[in-house]
Length: 387
Image (tube, rainbow, N blue to C red; front, top):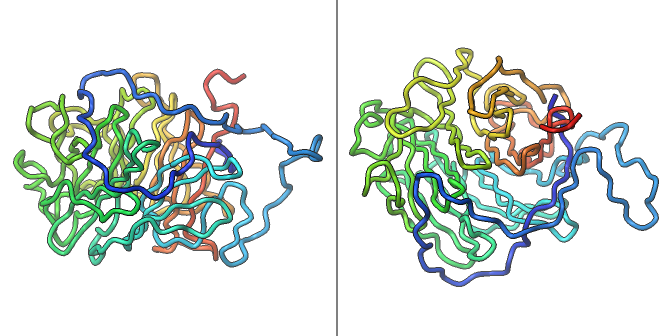
């Protein structure tokens, strides 16, 4: 069973304000490449560990119960940010002054904020977006070299189109990929780093399935672009950003730690689904949910795929083998009354933890501290190599 605790130090501290940045260098090829090595950081505090401060030796850190929230104050140790509005993206950016997780988070209404525990969110950018349909500010990814360049990428719906913007603190947001079709539905998008230097972009079909099948349209696709919005080197078709096609309303993208597997969730015509991304058309789903729990973000761990859901509380757990084949039916965890409720974006932190954002203010049963950014961590028995 997945259990949640707040822990995990990250790799780097957020630098100060930044001036303008040149375009990122071209990423590595779509084919297998050596991974970028992140800057070494402090050792994460894993489940069951306790690092006492002076005078705390011998204390049991596990509370017997967690008091309910009081306004924006949340006493759950897993929560690092509270009182946000419809969290649509999360991304760890380093460690805070106490060694906890610092992160970027996006809200559907257009804010990009920096969040740390017990500190008010710091607004990095306020974007003008059109959230009247299923769009708005719906995707977030960081540069592979964020520690050096502080670059963030967001997916937004405007009055005329859907697009990807590049943001550096202190600079005006720069559109790098525009003209993604906009429609009455199918405007939500998702972003992820491919762990090789490029940005993956999942786009909706703008309410027109024919666009998703059209190789000349950016709608209903998984795209792969470089830091300036151009088709990434090594894409399946030279000069084209398209990797695969056939999406309707994507909920999230995730990449395995070794960059070997890419997954995308989608609210397809007949069921919710998750697909393993391969060049070409989507093909058959790796798993479908006819009951439509509203699949959103995902995290590809070594032996399980986590999928968050927007319409039902809890976390879907799909057991899988090293090739990415599922070995059993999904189980649902964190659906208890003291769980996080409905969850949207998810970003893997390591092979046993992920950062998530809640979306309880939209159709859920919010507590006073919603919406929140939190960490979910699985138990020792579920970690490969543990007895």
